[in-house]
Image (cartoon, rainbow, N blue to C red; front, side, top):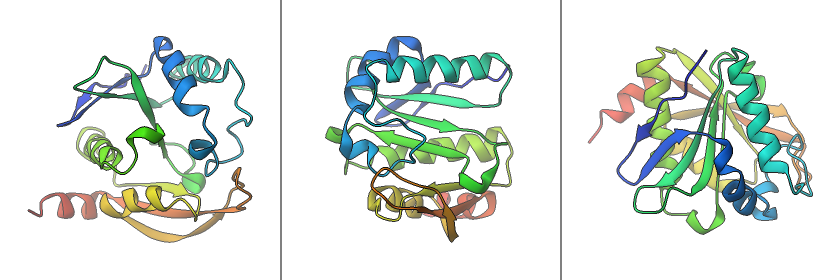
Length: 187
């Protein structure tokens, strides 16, 4: 079984997603501004048990042996409430990406997701020894694009992927070990 490791950054704790995160995730994720640029595989309107169902499904996949890492993002200076989520599936079909993330709207534009993704990139390349992986975002999701640009992703093209806001394709990016290690060494 694959275990999601606890990762700490200067402002965040990335800890394994737990069923106890359901209430906080339900509260933060049930927000059109968060969901509108996500793929339509995410239900909208978001059901009342959406977070609990999501967490149970992901934990069941991990228990069944699927290589999937699921982190709840928690501010170090707070009470442990989940304010976001990062999932990473290193061996998944990279056509639609290996990593996804979201952050609660009150925490946008503070560099928190860039900080978290940098830590996940370290995990992917240093702990797992990956050579590369792919990530995607809706073309209108400027914040997600900026996180990718700041964390070493290189734009490679578009893939078909419907989003809630009506966009029918996604930007596809490649994150390579070589680029990440080179860029993270810069002062």
